[in-house]
Every structure is written in C-alpha cells, then in structure tokens.
Length: 474
Ligand code: BGC
Image 1: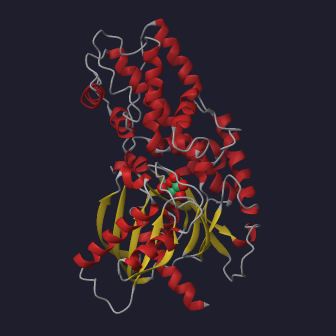
Image 2: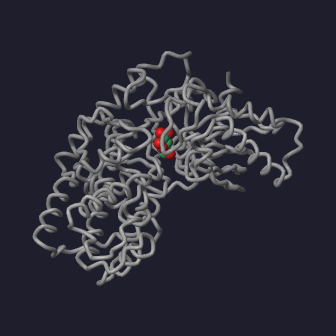
Image 3: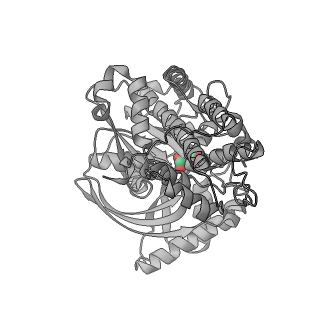
C-alpha cells in the first residue's frame, strides 16, 4: 500500500461527561460539510472560475501560465530547476530522457524564518549561493553558455510571459520586503549576475503547473496538477476560447495551462462554512482576510485549527483539567503540527497509544484520560475530513467545468497532505462521488487522482523545455 492510501481509523463514541459530549456534538455540526452544502460550494466555485477567466484581478485569479500545448513525453535534454515555496529550497539537475523517463540530481537547503521575512535581496543572494555551490559540486561551474533554469516560484504571480511575472502577494508564512509588485525572475537574475553564476532563468512556473507537466510527461491524459501540502493550489488545461480576459498577442495554441490560485477562493466569505476557530486562525495569521480556502485545507494550518478547538475546550474546563497538567506547549501558536494529526488519525489501537504518545512527546501533556484521547482524535477527524471534502469540491469543479466524460482524466497531485495524511484521498473520492453522481459508480477510474512526485523540479525543467520550444517557433 502506498503512503497516500493509508486509511484513518475512526474513533468510536466519545462517552465523556454530558458537557463534553454536548460540545463535541455541536463541534461536529459546525465542522461537517454535508452533501448539500458541498454542492453549493462546488457551484459557487465553478461560477468563480468563469468570472476569473473573464475578468482580470478576480478573487480566483485564474492566471494564464503562458505554457501552451501539451507534452508528448518525448521531450529530452538537461535542465536546471529551482524550487522555492515548499518546505525547502531545492536546486535540481533534471535529465529528460524521452518516453516519459527522467533522472534528477538535487540538493536541498532550509530557508530560515529570518530569510523568509527579511529583504528579498538577501533571499535572492542566498539562493544564488546555493545554485553556485550545486554547480560547483556537479562540475558545471565553468560552462561556455549560460545554463537554462526553470524557476518554480510557488506564490501568486501574474505572468506576462513564460519567464516574466509580478508577485501579487506572499503566502505560506513568507513575507520578504521589496518583492510584492516586482518580478521574481529579475530579482533573482540580478543576484546571479552579481555573483557571476552562469545561469539564465528561462521559465517561471508555479508548482501546480510544474506538477501538471510532470504528470503529463508520463500520463498524456493529464488535465490538472494540484498541490495539497503546506499550501494548496491547482492548475488545469483550459481552452483559449474560454479565457475571455486574454488580450495578449495572438497565439496559435488552442489550450493554455491556467494557474487558478484557488487558495484565495471565497476570500469574500460568502459560502465557506467558517467557524470561530477558522476566524481566529485567520485573524492571527500574517495575511488576514486572504487565502481563506487555503487556510481550511492546507498542511500549514490544519494543526492550528485543531489547536484552536483544543484550547477553547481547555478554557471551558472540558479538556486537560488534571491538576498539574502542563499546558504551556499546547497554548503556543502553531505547536500542534498537522503531522501530529496524521499519526493520530492513523492510530487504530484499542488504547489509542499513539495519540497518547504524540501528546506526551510533542506537547508534554501527561496523564491524559481515555476520554480526552478520544476527543483529540475526533477533533482531528473532523478538521481533516472537512479539508479533504473541500479539496474534493475544488477537483470536482475543475472536472465539471472542463466537461470530463466517462473516458476520465488524470489529476497529478503533490504535497505532504495528499501523500501522508491518512484517508485524505478516500475522503476526497467520497466527496467527488457525491458531487458527480452520474460517475459515482466508477469514480476512481474517471477522476484518476495520483501522486505526482517532484512536480516542482521535473515540472520546472519541462517548462524550460516548453519555453525553448516556444522560442524556437516564433
Ligand atoms: C500559493 C500558490 C502555490 C500553493 C502551493 C499557495 O500559497 O499561493 O502559488 O501553488 O501555495 O504551493
């Protein structure tokens, strides 16, 4: 069984005090998105997609990626890729071998909190140094011609060319000064020039677009690429004739990859069933009122929503009330990580020994009662299920809008939540079957979700390759 198909083990009845039981029933009511509500959300999502395709600067930005046409799987060559926006910064050397095959060599570096929120110039200098070190290690430091690099920059960028764009806002905890409103390619290229690193950035790509391309390299019927990880987003192939806002030069292509920036869906708060726990998270985040959908479905935030529920119960003397219980760790922001939820949801033991261990080891919560273990597990289930169902609604919207028929389509997905969170995929399928009842009998063969590994690395290389192809045909 691959990691992304590990199933959760639902907890049985809570059997707590009447107050605890009542709280949990009310919580369940608030965090459950039933079929009817999910249909409303899906319908609104499709309406918003169409608006975004027709109108610039709409909430659902629907950004043309300038990646035209489809891949054949026969693309070949050596390309450099740079991946910024996930957990780590990565430099990757990709060799495309054709027939959907590739090899990669890569290096990872951590981006410190200081770099994430300092001047953009410092971040670019750091990246240029990482690329330089990698090239030296790979004996690529002395080349006659600059090496072509595909830059996966996983933030909302309004593209104006395949290698140009303007950062509209930071997300996922990044907040460097001097970058919003600027072109990340020019900023990084400047650092590379200053440091004499022989690299030319030829493609700028969102990680979802990269994921779509890397999946398509192996599965030509790929319709979309999604990231369900620290942050969330999707890209899909749209007909040029549906992109009403496209005013640029004529293109002979009939299709273009659209970066949806779906994390911003419903920033207006008209349809999503937000609770006070979500509002609290949003208010205390570095980007209040934005990325509302992302905050309900992504790895960066799910643990914090759970923590908000837990602390609310603590404030009402419904949880961790034992004398001497140390509640310092659980009281600090972002101390309940989404990875804890994965371990907790997977725990199928009778005595919930893993839940106990997670709370003890990571949060110093000891002497936790069985009822409390069940409550924590149930909160994780509710928050995790809601996330997967909402992500499923986004996928159904793409499929319905693009009129997927019984032949079906492939959806490449990357990201820690999809890969590691128990039942995330099967909960998405349950939602998909509810939203696409005509296909419910065969949903897994029609909406073919699959893990697309290293979309950011291989995808950036493929985009650099597409950029070559495009430049050669003008
Ligand atoms: C960004 C997207 C990105 C997604 C997944 C979001 O926060 O806005 O551009 O694709 O995270 O990394």
